[in-house]
Length: 430
Image 1 (cartoon, helix red, strand yellow):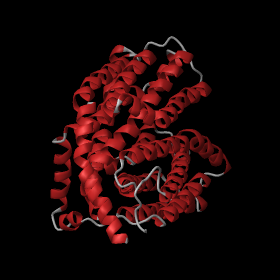
Image 2 (cartoon, rainbow, N blue to C red; image 1 turned 60 degrees about the vertical axis):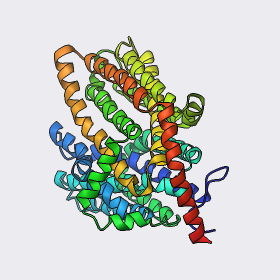
Image 3 (spheres, helix red, strand yellow; image 1 turned 180 degrees about the horizontal axis):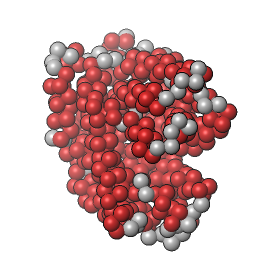
Image 4 (cartoon, rainbow, N blue to C red; image 1 turned 180 degrees about the vertical axis):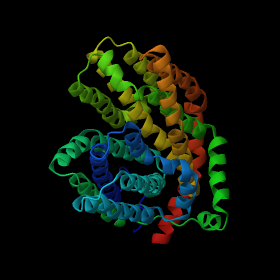
């Protein structure tokens, strides 16, 4: 049988190539995340300009998020992924060449960051829509796959990539970007070998509708589906809570926890370690508590962990709290993605993913502004205390919208669609 394979007792062989592509790309992203601010700071020391370069990659989500989701639902997901990665590999050659000819500039970096962010919008949306196609929307397989993908991405972006990018930058300003370009090229090659997904009749019909009508249909679907609404609100409220403290975290670490500059990196690594653990064990937590119960539990743990961090008297307890926070966040991302991929119809998957991500991205600057106001008015602990309260409030929202009963009902309603998709695929392949 060719094409997409049904998951029976494990993951299909094609997933290994997708997993490898994710690992390679995650490593490149980690290198890029460390190298970009270093390169920008070598061109300017103006804080506003540096923050502009850092924020530019998020702008495409605000401008094109809904449209991007609708386009992904029109296009072949696999082709979208490998084409975007090939394009990003070529795009990253621009700063490499510019550095070689000593014509690097902030406007050039802003332009590259914007285009890379646009590519990330399309790639991430297409990937989230393609994974359930590859795994026939089977929840157990999706949970394992998302756990492995999230853990690998966390390791590449959080552990290996950033220090590698910093070291490579000392060798040459363009070296990290050349490595990132290579990672995108390898990812494109691997993804190109994956099986193509089925072309749904609904998607063909939808392509005749207006793009904005399709985008609105995706948003309406999310806001009228209780489980999906709960899964979308979770990262949105979470981003407000987390970003409230993000902007003053370095000051809090220095002035309240008395952590040195070298120790600050270790503090951040605690959260990454927790995230890796949470991603790895998310499946077991979901099996023990049920997916809805696990999502409620992780929401409560996030709130308590951030509260513990806010009142920590020193570096060690603060690091432990961040590790617990990271573990809860890692488990949440795996479980939430699995439910979403299992219950959303294939023809809507791109738009639902884009709506969820757009809400999360839009909430981030609100959190940053809130944190700055709170820290200025009430002290450095205030953003973390208010963030903890928001997360605890989110526990009650999660408990009402994504209960075990609601999740199981949604999964049961989606199973006939998944079975039909598998049968159609197998019939076309035979």
